[in-house]
Image 1 (tube, chains in turn yellow, cyan):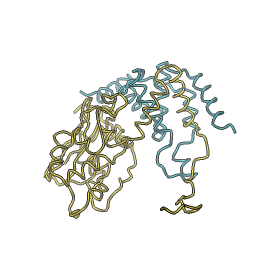
Image 2 (cartoon, chains in turn green, cyan):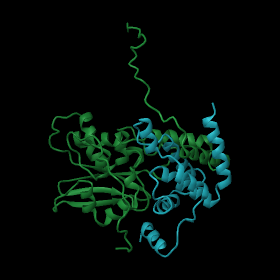
Image 3 (cartoon, helix red, strand yellow):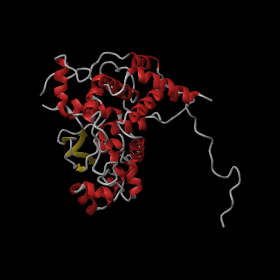
Image 4 (spheres, rainbow over the protein chains, first blue to last red):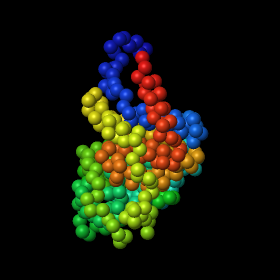
Length: 241
Length: 129
């Protein structure tokens, strides 16, 4: 029989610090939402469903997909041929778990998994706005949303990757995939050396969000995304090339 | 030509997706509002995003999906334009919130005065004992 816990044995930690101040931005968010509901633009129930959905999103399922693909050739084959079906095995149902049941305005139901090779590196962008495979990768980072990244990656991919600290040899081709109205992408990077014998959990830990976008490659010991300051474009592009 | 470069061209021609005239209420928030990075540092909070961010994301999606009141692509294009101009010095996601409110006011989805009045009500509600 389990010992009845007594006070102090619950493993409770002191409460985390909180912001004890109401900010104008917090108030603005609530006021906009309340007015939108009152005007019938959406209902309180709609908003609750969307918030609940947003709360479920994170990068872990995509990392798990990659780790499984590294360990299981059959699963890898499924992932690169049918990303939506492969997603089911990491708990993501692209079609039926959305609030709308047919994808969302920014989460359409076609996931493609882009497999890197020793001579080919993939990287993902959305030049139009900031489409991102949210169901399996969570919310996009700020830099992904910036015109600076979106415009420059398609023109100078090698240079932009170098700014992320990813310097590719000249004999490695870079393929930029532009998200569009129907498709979302994640990168299946190559499994790095030094991970022989690792479990799926260990492997998933080094598949960071940035690796899944393609601006970084997995490395043993690296389990977090590098912090990246966001800059406006210094020399904005003025012409179509 | 994709839509992004089309927008560039429009901007160069003096055409804008959104009316960039400042809105007094939002200007006050922009200049006096305390952003999450500042509050988090002061109170020792480590989460990188403000708690209201998830609600903002849900509002943006619901506005696009439930009534098509503010379609996603239009909102994002306007957010890009506002982020490079009026709200360029505001960090994310506060910038996204100001841009959303700006787009809604300029479309007449909400009125500036009624938003100001609702903000006062919400503030009083949150700060009442």
